[in-house]
Amino acid sequence: MQFSLSEEQQMIIDTSRKVGEAFGLEYWRKKDAEKAYPSECWQAICDAGLAGAMLREEYGGGGLGLVETALIVEELCAAGGGATVSQIFMLNPVFGGVAISKYGTDQMRKEWLPKLCSGEMRFCMALTEPDAGTNSLEISTVARPDGDGWRVTGQKIWITAVGEADKMLVVARTSPVAEGQKKTHGMSLFMIDRDREGLSYTPIDKLGTNTLPSSQVFFDNVRVEPHELIGDVDGGWHQLLDVLNAERIVTTAGLIGTGRLAIRLGADYAKDRKVFGGAPIGTYQSLQFPMAQHWAELEAAKLLNLKAAWLGDTGAPYGSESNAAKLIASQAASAVAEHSMQIMGGMGYSKEMHVERLWRDARLFRFAPVSEQMILNYIAMANLGLPRSY
View: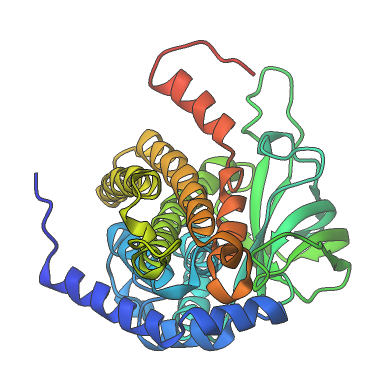
């Protein structure tokens, strides 16, 4: 069992740190206040060759894997951006890159993947629905046959960065579930132009992740061409799982980086702050112990996430590891961001100190992209052998 990093992996971490530090805390505070997409940061990530790390070299990628992608995302998030940086990786290298590289046509790969790596093309995914939520098998958006293509009708919610995307990965039912069939049958994936007749969206006012807007999306008889199918008709569920599993790795890496950043900000403040004319408040065990606890949790989540990524890179199942890592990381990152705010007292509540943004952004990931409760359901069934509870 080998835990040391290769020279190439260490170089990737160093490059990621350098890029991340060029867009530090003040950059992200400004973008958060303006609710502006971090285009400059994403372009720098692309220019450094980090966006396409797990895509093949012939398409402009690095030919690496999930392990290297996790290392990249963690370091970028720890440098100042926090969890919102990991979302940009979900949108582009995962929703766009994984879907196209694994299940797209040769033409899609040749035309779109180099543009993803260079930053010329951006992506989003339309999966979640108002009445389905976590239960993606209950989606009601349908794609009905229309000549050699389809017409999509339905509604999605909490879709990230729609307005900034060129392409949208759409999940829809192409066949109803017949008696005796599994609910996983009949779902299909399409990669369509975001700017298309019949597709509209409205923004959702929300607590955090302000640099990446969320929207409701409406499909009103939207035409989908035959060449826009990703994978197999009616067989999209298992192909979607490959996308979602990669998303889980990226999410967790971002939370680990966020936790590291929150600990650094809280510890730096605690080492300097003195009250009542005494020693720095960092000497108080009541402040030290929670941060030490969360540091340990984040380290455990990191090891589990890298194991999951390694399993994914070797073609082995990694659902249990990736889910457990995400559970631990989301709780620890959210908790340590809040604890750092507590260390700072009233100043922690100010935007000047940055941790309130980290808390707002990290809090999302305790229920997205999969909730703590659904992760525990999965572990109970898959790892404990307990009966289905929902």
